[in-house]
Length: 217
Length: 217
Image (cartoon, rainbow over all chains, first blue to last red; front, top):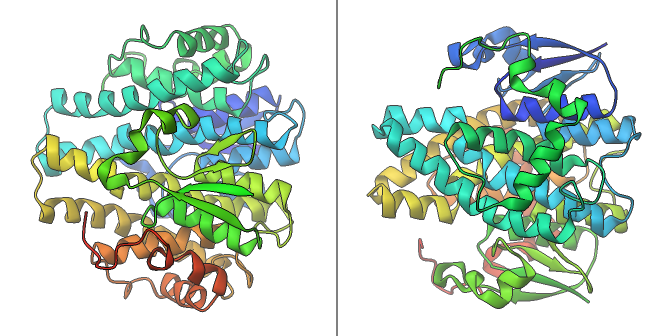
């Protein structure tokens, strides 16, 4: 049985939950509460030296980094595919995923916002402005790419890895109060995914460790 | 002929130059001076909506995002391989690459440091501290992973994608004044790569658009 080191509101863990569900793989979720630094526990750091979530225990190996985990899923469980067959199309899907994974998410995740609060004395308005600025820059380019490649989903008419990144980033953006009005293509893909059971089951609010009352930290 | 949209000191472009050289592929370099915002030119943004480098024009398609470009190279030109054969090992290499691509580099690249200077009134000491902190956090975990997996290179005894990320990140770290003393495994891999012609030819100072006198911005 696959064991996912998870946290309900981690955007990177949310991506992997979607991919596992799309592949029809069952897994056991092991929650690490990022807010209380449970992921810095030495026992967990022995498994994952970064102490971040997600990590996927496949029995004998613990895989880390959501992008590496999802490529592993694609290689070891090819159906249904989350990448299209042609190499240039695969590159287009991976580029949309990387735009989110490298150019948006690292700038609005919990550890960076904490650093801005603690070491830069930023207040809530300033950290929100920071996060919203990077999301807007990334979404503006992503909107064009989804317009070029999407036919219902981010690329083509079936879910791909790009959607596994888009939906958690939209969830995060909405928590920061970003309006999707300037991004109709992104909004349409997100709404389409909202109707797909693999995405619904992966949603933070449907995880066993979710807060019943949402707080901001 | 492959055409690389390039900039000598871009860490992400440097990765792709190494991979192209390791694969023995010749390419034509087209430089965009990031410091003068040449990459925001509308003609370039029509090719790459993000307006970032690198992008690889393969004739008919322009591929963006270094990780997507390098996976495309691996798929279309498999020899020599930059990923090991076993799926779990491939995941380990990709995880080291993603640690750098997602958890270090996005926080110390030019656009983020500019934002801290312009919108947060950070001085040079503060932006250096910021960059050095994220590099130290990432390198501490990477040092453990290279110790677990490396035998001369980051993973095993031949160059992989992980080395294509490690060397440019070390170059960047050294510009911020990060000492490699706490990271003997990373330093040893970097020194090994310093002797490899594919890495040497990709080095920023060997690019046609390199400044003859290094400046910090």
